[in-house]
Each structure stands twice: as C-alpha cells, then as structure tokens.
Length: 196
Image (cartoon, rainbow, N blue to C red; front, side):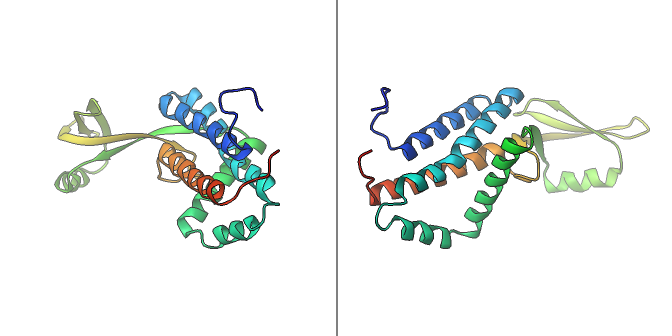
C-alpha cells in the first residue's frame, strides 16, 4: 500500500498519472513562460519514464516482451518521430539545459490580401486589436500606412525548433500523453503483474 488516494495503481499507471498532472499544469499555465517551462520539463521527464517503468514492471510477465517488440515494430512513422523528439527533449532538459518555450503568433490573411501585402514591398508589420478582432498594418519607409482588416490570429507556445518545429508544444504533449495512455491501457488490459 502506498498510503495515498490512488493505491490501486501499478507503478506504470502511477507514473502516467504523474505525467497527466503535469500536462494539466501545462494547460493551466500556457502563456506564463517560467511556469510553462518548468511544467514542460516535469511533464517530459515524467512521461518519458512511463515506458521504462513499464519495462521494469512487466518484463517478466509471460508474453509481454513479444507484445512490446511488436508494438515497436508496427509503430507508424509519425509515432516514431514523436517518440524520437520527446526523447531528444527529455535528454536535453536532463543533461544539457532548460528547454525554453516561446510564443509564436500565426497571422492569417485572405489570399487576396497576401497578394496586396506582397506588392507593397519591405516595411514594418504591426498588429492592432485583440486576438479575436485584429488588423494588420503595413508601414513602409516613407511612413505610408496600409491597413488590412480582420485577420485571424492563432497564438501558441512552441519549444525550440529542434524539438517540435512549426508545431504547437501543448498539442504535441497532448499527443504524446494520449499515446502513452493508450499503450498503458492496452498493456494493463492484456497483462497482469504479480502482486508486489
């Protein structure tokens, strides 16, 4: 008995619950740089541990090693890429230094407006308004201003490009957690570990 509220969980399930806790903190602290970065590091560390704890816990259970090899062999290229990137991120944060998220805002303009903006040439781009109601202002070197009405903005946190280039960090963490949760569920449904 662990003496807490979730005593019926295996070590693997407990570590998955820890990763889920940090994922929830990531969602709550999205856009709060230091907190987001701290929880991102904690999430990646906890989430990457799930598999290794599963190996330790299930390796002697009949049939588990074969199932595990088959899961690895049949993983899609997208899953393999996600696993590679999260491993790289975990190794970086544990052995090299902090992983720092940055906020990136994508600006969506209608195609006709993009053509119009491209014709204006070099200049400074400014945003005016809110995320829901924004316009783009182009200011050229002569001080002439051209306004583009009603653009769409999408703000998201992104980690250094070497980990998740051009992707939303929170979405990638959600994908990773969902993958782990699916694997853990399949494992615990198929295999029973001896009482510890």
